[in-house]
Amino acid sequence: MSHTVLGISAFYHDSAAAIVRDGEVIAAAQEERFSRKRHDARFPRHAINYCLGEAFVEADDIDAVVFYDNPLLTWDRIVQNTMMAGVAGAEQFEMACQSVLGVKLWVDDHVKAAIGGLGREGRVLFSEHHMSHAASAFYPSPFKEAAILTLDGVGEWATTSLGRGDGARIELTQEITYPHSLGLLYSAVTYFTGFKVNSGEYKLMGLAPYGEPVYASIIRDKLIDVKPDGSFRLNTEYFGFIDGLLMTNDRFASLFGGPARTPESRITRREMNLAASVQAVLEDVVLRLCRTARRETGCENLCLAGGVALNCVANGKVLREGIFKDLWIQPAAGDAGGALGAALLVAHTYFDAPRQMNPTGRDTQKGSYLGPTHSSEEIRAFLTRKGAPFERVSDPTERARRLAGYLDEGKVVGFMSGRMEFGPRSLGARSIIGDARRPDTQATMNLRIKYRESFRPFAPAVLPEMAATYFELDTESPYMLLVAPLRKERLLSTQGDASSEADSDDLLQMINRPRSDLPAITHVDGSARVQTVHADDHADFNRLLKAFKDRTGCGVLVNTSFNVRGEPIVCTPQDAYLCFMRTELDILVMEDCILLKPEQPEPDAKDDWRKTYELD
Image: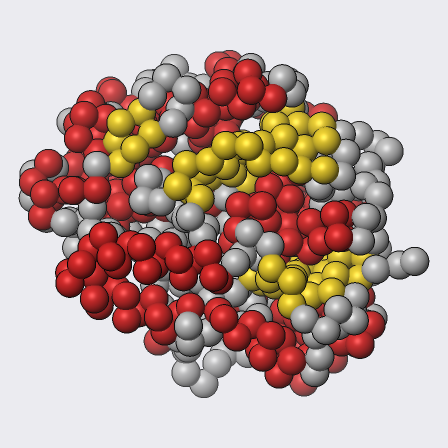
């Protein structure tokens, strides 16, 4: 008998929905892509409706609806935290009451209001937060058995969990609980360096190579006590999240020479060094935990999930250390992926769906292309209504050849092709693409198109068979979740490590210094966040890379998300065209339709995206 399960995550950040049939992932999407509100935490009504439509089911056809965590256990943590904090925690308690008592405990009502029913079970099932993460990491992985490690800010109580998956069975055996959290430590430094918590952590990771870990010893001595097995405790005297609404307090500031950086102000050497320091500490803890996971489980392979698993620099270190034979990271490793994990968990353990492995030896996440797609007919109808000139190039090989020519000329292309990605990374379905060989590509794309901080690095998309030609990488990286060094022969003779610029505060000068023959994707430390593009995952993007290689000899392109700062990644043709017109993108491709910027009608008044989106 076939079973269909709807998974939901909501009410913290990055709400999402996923639908699974007999253990097969049918669809998954974040609410932000439809609502156009970055990191939207509201109930994912739009994402649910999309998933139901993609699976061709009504509410009555769903066998079960599952929520990704347990609100009662979360409430237990909040109550106990308030008892520990006392009067100082009153304001935080009031906000938590609004979230848990006002929203999370009434998930059933939200589901009924959204889809008209609760499925055949007649009730919402509840997973636990870290079990949802673990299921999202293990079930789609290519491994029959594997160690599982989940790390984030906090679930109900757990912040770090270790376990093992075997076939369709998952067992979590060890955990670290709140307030001791590697994710919250990293978020505290994110806040202190002037970035936004729950969205700016990847900026901190990108800033780290510009600094030196001069504060690492202070962090280890004062903020976190790490044991040889990777277990740890935070010194809560330096943090504000237990009894207040800020991540850090005055004692934290005194450790690092003054108050937190004001958001959007100049980034100084202190912030660079803080980023390098907390990154070094995080990597050390993760490596220790991984060694413990290998020893405790005896497994050759590792699955990772939770927000900390999006730290692709740490992931790359784990791979290069050789602790495990291979690792697989859930592409939607944060809370959005909890919706998928909860649905898979119920499918395999509640309904006993057998686990189907990919016969090719690859994963079953389908490249994480699990969101909506739009037909050529839809796109042409939209462009005709807009009065937007376009050319239809139906032959995919000719289209790729044409786009390769534009990229070789230095043009930057907005690329919309196939089903939208699930997770925070654009993987070629909703991407902005440029020439990795050009020294000016990074600054052009950051400042004129993305309108974001100039230091933010870009990722290379590469043909899988050519990855080892450019990078010290001997495995696939389809989800852009591994950082690898460039091969030494690709680095320029002037390339050095960050220490050669340790006294400089001029980020722009450091960024504009070419470091390899692929300057647009080479970070200051000679590394890159790699995406390998397999034809089985995304034929159009793979075809474009091949066409660019045929034309230029280079099998690498810059790939970054199709959005401006503060905007969710584009979802629809309307979103893509609006972003195209608001920025200095040269070309827009939507399926088989190509639009050139000079041919587009001049808008009556240029939209200011800054009035539409809150800066991340």
